[in-house]
Length: 320
Image (cartoon, rainbow, N blue to C red; front, side, top):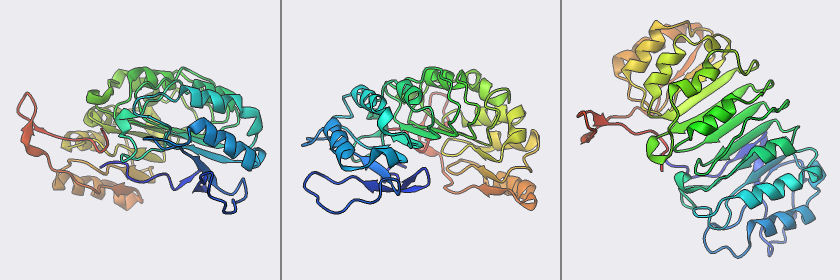
């Protein structure tokens, strides 16, 4: 699986591509769409700061509620530090901004592991009313501990999430956060987080408002399932998402033997390596209680590709 489409919505608003300088069509109301601002990654005729300046001159930024940052020139080789600085400096012009996503780039523009990110802390500090924040790409990504009173949704999509980013999120004070979505990835692309790094999310002592927890797209998906099987945080979740990784029977056995999951509304395990008997068992255990169990996208290990101990290799959904 690769990311082949841009975001279709953000903050409950449909995405709308801010047109190029030669496009004279009428623009929608400033607060009616999620504006996507993008420059070509390859051979850009207009750099992202120029797109942003033109946008700020064309739209009533005081009414903008949702903003999507797409590509920028040479995103595969150039960090977005200047872009983030420009957004942070312009914060007083966007008093209504409630949703922000950085790096809405498809694989045709730039593979997820190539996207050069930077420190996103200045954005969270500059926009204290922000309720939804997302970022795609882990290369160069920094997330220093922050306190943010309003943030409700945090999503970090990577093919490899550095442990320092995980630790930064874990050390942050986010009292309003209801949804946390981390794509942990593979060590091949910088995803070096371990179970101990996830412990602050599991104990239930952090993120008091959390209701949806996604720890997914991981090579340690079984270990995550085993840790969550007895994790106190699960008791107050509505949705648990362990999808997109290499989950197999070991992880599902742990979930079945652990604490109750019957209070969940949804358990997302799609893109997995779980055998049919275990798929039947977990559905039989949860479906009668109204839990939606997503076991779609069943994977088969590649018998022609084995690791050092002879085990057939398994792939996460999104890596490169």
